[in-house]
Image (cartoon, rainbow, N blue to C red; front, side, top):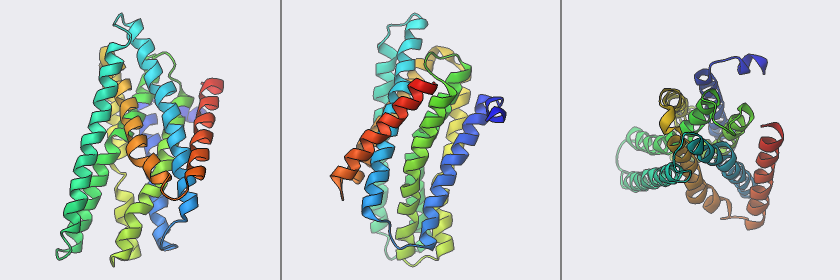
Length: 265
């Protein structure tokens, strides 16, 4: 841990998103052992991840954004509000593209399998950009001296995103296997869907270090993006099979993140 703490925040953000990519790869690896994931387990995992990401969005991103906005002499709520809305809209329009891409994929049944898989991975990749950027912004905020941002809170945000990446990796690889792809090819395509996260994390961290005056906007942007991901992706998927487990997972995930951030942050 000491070695990690002594690294530049850009390197820390990169390492953290290598972790989130690794969890995606583990999820994609399930294609080698299973044809599907237990629905109850999936509901609990997604609910827990939603709780962690919701708590992290406030304590690690939005609250520090408001505090820093005040510190810089801005209207406390203005930049955080604009950033939060912009981040949410970014995910909204990204999902619109994803939905359209998946519809096009369904219409490509007579096309080459490679073309269909490239289309699917491209759409999922766009979905992963704000997640990687949120991690980069959180780590960049440490070096920029943002109030309320700590190494623990940044790491917990990465862990929360990593947890939800596990079923995401499986969600890409398992359907491809069912379409006739080999296990190896299904795995490779599944893990590739998260390769954009380290890149976007590095970009996010560099932006934070370069332009401190707009840091409240960037922090809130990342928070808005995370909440939008929770609302549009995690919660709807988690309650499909078991609302009780999803709810308990959400509550437990939120509490875990809150305790860790307040006690150790």
